[in-house]
Length: 303
Image (cartoon, helix red, strand yellow):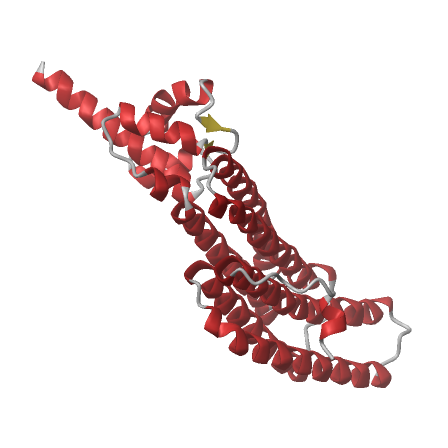
């Protein structure tokens, strides 16, 4: 009897580890779950199959947070409802998504630096995970709003906006990576120098914007806005430099013409990553300080 109880305890513990992994790590397959926990895929299937059938675990390995609490209690695990279904859960998911997007930006730009088509293709593949993360966050936010009827949870929908902004940044990473796939020329060293500065500035803006949202660091507002001004200045300098190169080159070759078009898209992508980071910062200020965002389009507020 004791051996049977020990086996049940071990089984329950493993199931809780699987559920926590799905909630916080966003695994894409059962193989990934098995590898992470050091168990067989067959055992993963055996444990989660009943929860898939009853709807606790949904498609793309998402968990209904309300059902998660019920399952945890049935396994003898104490779960703090506020911690699981409140801000902590979504914060962790957004933090993971932001780290993934940072890597997506890095890999996309490394593809240009090394003019490596394989790295560019790998960077493009990362966008599938980015899109999957958005869906997981959206579903979790819907569950939180449905089971928490307190006024402060009305702000939970702002999590969706941040997730959507991160997804948009992922899309612009595609513009950067596609430069290597679409073009036959490497970037000149003078232009590459400007792109490196734009890359570093965009990465820093995103990092500060996410700190503002996840940790309530609204005092970072001025730093972010200074970086936004810097990235626009860098954009102007890069465009002027490319315009000079265009004047010095013949457009008889279609490839050379396309080179400049694709290069402008890379510059625009970094500028848009910076702008979207400012939008995340604005959402953070509304979330933490209850200050509504301006309704005037940002393009009209820059001057």
